[in-house]
Length: 81
Image 1 (cartoon, rainbow, N blue to C red):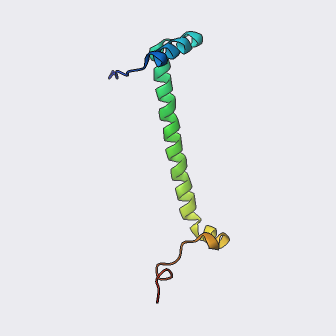
Image 2: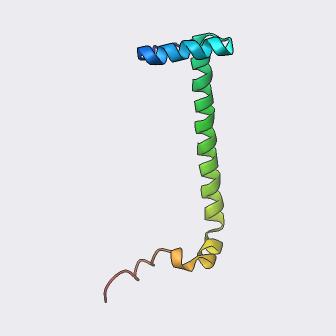
């Protein structure tokens, strides 16, 4: 299995040791769990953002009708005559 060396300050290392002890786990398992949780959170945020983009695109006309003042000007509207 691939490995990763991570450097911590003395304070961070002390905190990790204490947390691992309190949870009854190893420091290695604690760090792996934290990384896995962050990866899962990142993926969920990406999926949520993509779902929102799809929803917004699918309902763009409805949003435009409901909030006309928030619509950007048409390409020709912003130019001086």
